[in-house]
Amino acid sequence: MDRSTALRLLWMISLATPTAFAEQAAAGLTLSQALQRMRTHDPNLAVAQTAVDQAAADEISAGERPNATLSYGTSKINPAGHNGPGSLWDKSFDTIVSIQQPFERGGKRRHRLAAAAANRDASEADYDDVVRRERLVVTQAYWELKRAQQKSESAHALAALARGSLDAAQARLRHGDIAALDVERLRIGAAEADNAAGQADAAREDARVALAALLDAGQDADALEAVDDWPGPGFVAPEADAANGRADVQAAERRIAAAQAALDLAHAQRKRDISVSANYEHNPAPFGHTLLGFGVSVPLFTGNHYDGEIARANADIDAARAQLARAQVAARADLGRALADVRSANERLRRYDGDLVDRARRVERTAETAYARGGLALIELLDARRELKAVEDDATDARADFAEALAALAAASASMEKPSA
Picture 1: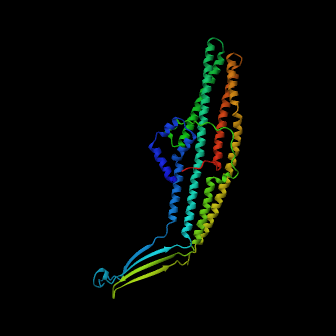
Picture 2 (picture 1 turned 90 degrees about the vertical axis):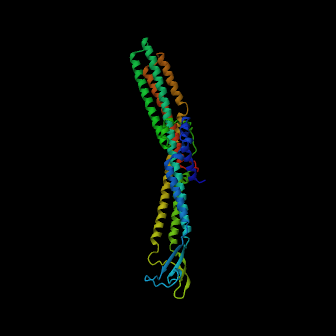
Picture 3 (picture 1 turned 90 degrees about the horizontal axis):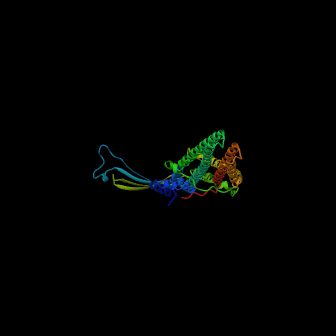
C-alpha cells in the first residue's frame, strides 16, 4: 500500500468515527496522539500529497511512447458518376490506408523518465518537509497549551490562598485582632488574584483553540488537555552537518538531478526521430490492382536547432543549484539558531529544575504563618505571594521554552522522526 492510499484510508476511518478524537481528548491528549491526528487532518499535508500524486502521474506520462497514426483516404471520385461499373469496391476510386509509427532516438524517453523520477522524488521530499514544519507547529502549540494549563492551575491556587486569607482576616476583624486597613488590602489582593486566574483561564482557552485549529478539532477544543510531562534538562547536540539531511535540502538536490535530465533531453532533441509508414492502396481501374508501399521520414532542422531549449535547461540547472545553496544556508542557520536557543533554555531550566520553586513555596508558607501570628507585616506577606507566583510562572515558562526549543532543534536537523506511510 502506497502512502497516498494509506492516508486516504486513515482519513476515511477518522470520518467513520467522528467522536473517537473527542473521547481521546477527554481522557487527556498526548503529543503523540496530537501528531497522529495532524497526519490525517492537516490540509497542508493533503495539498502536499496531491503534488506527489501529480508528480507520479507525470512520471507515467514521461514513460509513454509515441502513438502510431492510422489514416484512410479515397480519391479519384468523379462527381459526374463516371466511376466504372460494379460495387463500390470495383469502382475506379483510389483508396489508400496508411499506418505511421514514430520512433524516438537519442534516449529521449530515458531522459524524460529520469527527469520525471527526480521531480517525483523532489515532491516526496517536499511532502516530508511539510510534515517536518507542521510537526513543529503542532508540537509547539501542544507545549503552549501545557504552559497555559500550569499557569492557570498556579493562578487558581494563589487565588484560593488569597481568598482564604481574606476570610480569616474578616473573622479576626470581628474580634478586633486586625486593622480594617489590612482587611481592605487583603480584599484588593484577593480580587487581583481572581483577575489573574481569569486571565490565565482565558490564555488556556486561547491555547486550546489554537491547537484545535491545527488538528481540525474545533468542536472538541474545550476538551483538549495536554497530559505529557515536561522534558527534563539535557539534550544531545546534532552533528554539524545534520542540516544537510533535512527534507527541504533533499528536495533541492533532487531538483538539480531533474534539471540535469531536462538538459540531456534538450540535447537529445537534436537527434532526429524517425517515422516509419506502411501503405495499402486499392485502385481497380482500368486493370485492377492493389499496391503496397513503405516510407521513412525524418525532420530537417532548417530553422530550429533547439538552441533555446538547451539554453533554458542550462539556466534551470543554475537556478536549481542556487536554490540548493540557499536551502543549505537556511538549514544551517536554522540549526545554529535552534542549537543556541536550546542551550540557553537548558541552562535556564536547570536553574529552576532544582529546589527554587520549593524554596519560594516554603518562604510563602512561612510568611503566612508569621503573619497569622502577628510577626510579619501585611506588605511582606503580599510580597511573598507575588514572589511565589513570579517564580512558579517563570519555572513554567522555562520548561515550556525548553520543550519548544527541543522541538525546533529536531525540526532544524535531520533528527526529526521520519514520516511514515
